[in-house]
Length: 334
Image (tube, rainbow, N blue to C red):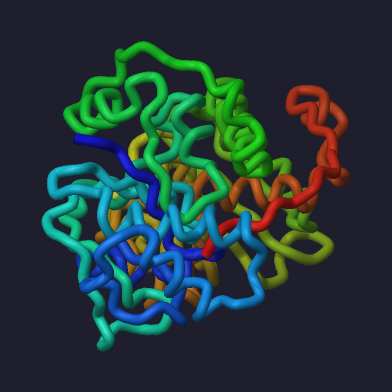
């Protein structure tokens, strides 16, 4: 058995199709049904007729990815899908061979059937070297270093005690931005635990122009922070903020609890910050409560921190020292 990375688009545009339809899907819409393609060489010739303007090295790389998806991935192999829409990773098991689904949306017609074992594993559950490997700038690739498959299967079984590996040799093919964000996520996860995460969120809301009242450590009555706009915080939006610092994703009960607390405090909106993300059962509520409650996972929190970092208190900047770095952005495969 093997472990494969299969992305769902540069911006996660295939994630919903993949998870709801039970497939791993790749793009390359100009390619027809590949079921009858008998060799990698035949695929290469077909690819060149459909993408005539691509350079030779690019053609070779992408044909290799498509062929791996078509032929090398086997039933029983594991699929890793790093999600773009939230800070989580889906893990599935391949259940069948290649299929061409003309009835699926553009960008998701070349598929492999997959049984998704977990669709909401927080990125914080994975060791840094695995996250680095999952940042490879390819749509399809095998992850084989440092007993990756064995460690992912162990994680699925609740065991995180396996040996960590090295990622130094993969630097040229990795998503450096994603790697940097994972480093920040790991640091915040260690440095700002429990009530310290509430302090971090409180300072961030102040930087965004809110007046806030943070509950002291201990029982908080269902609200960690009250926040409002205006000179004294009386103006809308008036927020009830609930913060969960656990690495585990929260469920529907936490969302419902915040809705009840908002009524108690006459708050017009709520903010639910869950460092470990949200279980898939919460997704429908997030959509239907769009104008009532905002949800932040670790990725959303970090994104807001980076946007308002220069407005944060000097003490917090000293505790969370960050520096903007420019680097060349390499194009991801389709």
